[in-house]
Image (cartoon, rainbow, N blue to C red):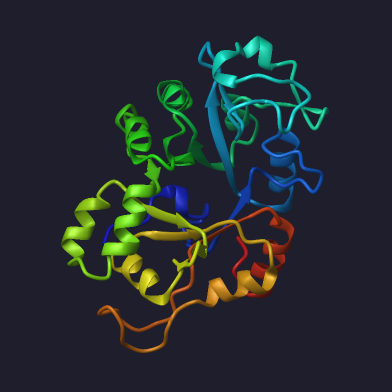
Length: 276
């Protein structure tokens, strides 16, 4: 089993459960704004979960939606607007939409979990990472494994990545029945699986799921968890002793939690002696 990539480790090289601030931290709804990222970093959060979309002229913004309509005072499809046109939009009527390049520069110790939202963003995103030599500071993810892999192929250095829908579905549905060597081939360019606790009626986060991930050297991150009791349960999830899917003993616990309430997750981890 290979050593964890630098993205997953604290500065002193130790491993702890990751606290990932979902689109930064803002109780006022200023998601994916510089103010939200600054608030998360101010709490001591090192990992920022965010989204990438490129404008018509290739500027990479940290923004979730396809259009400006929901969270800003402007309207329009980002992929059809220039960076100059988008620059007048304000999140919550107050905050400019940040550029990935600026956030990497202004928060040099932060690590970014970047969800690639469309095909149009693939090449511009890879170019920003290359220019900033940010390979060890980012994790590339997307619901589309094809899109995720398209970014990775454009990068000159090994960069952390988490599974898209196809790889996750194989891991969840076929994983209990496939030999590990076959499953490892499917997950060959994956370092983490990031999932909700449940998907409809299907419970994803089980001790067996965690044991499979552990055997393959994969991190397990769960989203989006805002209740301290749920955070505690997920950090303690696992089994004692042997049993089930050929796993070995020991308490597992998830490796990271994505949350809107970075303040509450910090409290939980501090009480457990697991804060970074």
